[in-house]
Length: 400
Ligand code: PMP
Ligand code: GLU
Image 1 (cartoon, protein in one colour):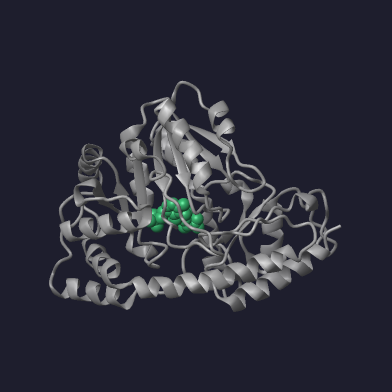
Image 2 (cartoon, rainbow, N blue to C red):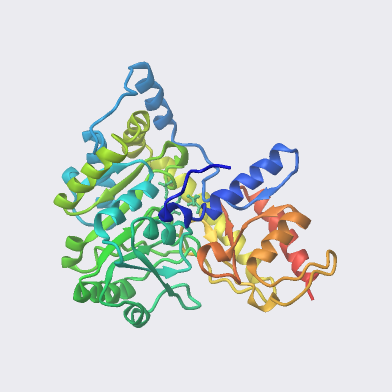
C-alpha cells in the first residue's frame, strides 16, 4: 500500500485504449499465440531509407544532444514546407514548432489555449486521446455526435457550444472513421468558428493519405481570417512510418508558437535530436517512399471496404483517408454467438469475442465514442487483412 495520493487530474485519467490493446496483442504474440493484428494505427512499413541513414550519421557525429527547444532550424523550415504542402498556405519557420510527437504537440496546444473550465468541442467518433487530453489541460470535453456519414453538422456544433466554447478540435482525414471533410462543410464550420471566436486545432496528421479521388482540404485554409485563430498539427508518424521516432509539428501565429515553444522548453527541453536529423532527411528526400506506402494503403482500403460491404447487416461508409475502417454492428446487438454462447451487446463485446474465438485483434468502438462499432486498422498486410475479414464474416454468421 502506498500513502502517495494522486492528483485528481491524473486519478481520473484513462490509459490509451488503443495502446492498451496493442500491448495485449504483443503479450499474446510473445506467448506464441498467433493473432491477426488490426489494432495499431501504425504503418507496417519502415521509415524512408534516407531517414535511417541520416540518423546513423547523426549518431556518429555525436549530434544526440539537446537542440534548440523549438527544434532544429532546418527542421522547422522543412516542417514549414510540409505545412505549406498540406494546407496550401504559406508558412515560415517562425510559425512552426517541432514537438515530441503530434500527441504531445496537441497537449501543449491545449495547455496554451484552454483556461480551466473552457469547452473544447470535437466531433465524435474521434481519436481516443482527445477527451483525456482536454481534461488534462483543465478543459471540458464537449463531444458532438456525427451523422451516419461520420461528419458533423454545424447546427449540432452550435447547439453543443456554450459561451465557454474555446476550441474546436478537428481531425481530417479522421481516426477512427477514415472520413475526409469536404470543403463546403469546412467553410460552414470555419464561418461559425470565426463568428464565435472559437479557436481551431486542426489535426492533419493523416493528410497525405486520401483514397478514391478524395482530396485533403485543410480546415484552416478555407477562409482567409481563420489561420489567425488556428493551430495546425502534423507529424512524421503516419505518412513517413516513423511512429517511434516521436516527431510532430505545430503551426500557428508566430507569437502563439513562440509561447508554446517556451512551454516546451520547460516540459521537454528539446525534441529528440537524432529523430530531428532523420526527419529533415525524410522530409527532403522521402516523398517517393510516402507515395509507395499511400498506394499500398489505398489497395487495402478497397479490399477492406469491399469485404465489409458484402457482410449483411454491417454498416460502413467507405473510408476516404487515414488507414482505418469503422464499421457499425448495430444490427447484431442483442444476438448471441452460437459457438461460445457469448452475448453481444456492443462493439467491445464483439471485439472480445473476435480476439478470444478467432484471434483477430481490433478495437471496440467505445474508445472512440461509438460503442456499436469497431475500428479496423488496415496498416497491415493484405494477407492478414484477407484472413481476418474471412474469419469476421464467418463469425457474424454464427450470431443469432
Ligand atoms: N492525431 C491522431 C488523429 C492520431 O491518430 C495520432 C496517432 N497516434 C496522433 C495525432 C499522434 O501521433 P504521434 O504522437 O505519433 O505523432
Ligand atoms: N494513433 C494511433 C492509434 O489510434 C496510435 C496509438 C495512439 O497513440 O493512440 O492507434
